[in-house]
Amino acid sequence: MRVVESDRKDNQLIHFLQEELALSPTSIAIALRHSQQDPGPLPMILWQYGLVSIEQLEQIFDWLEAA
Image (cartoon, rainbow, N blue to C red; front, side):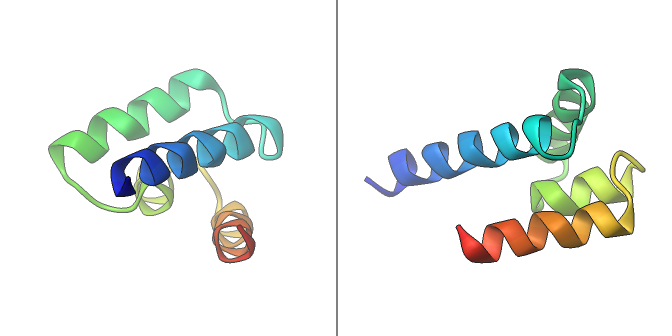
């Protein structure tokens, strides 16, 4: 059950990244690929690789907290 919840939350996060922050599918795919090699929270990976700004990172964390 937790895996299903996690997958649903991940899908909602990806939707938020695409719709609200206008991240490209390519940027998201890059971050997902890096998260498999070096596990960590997807928002931090996006930021570490310069795919989101610090302001966008804050928006992501705000969204995660509210979701």
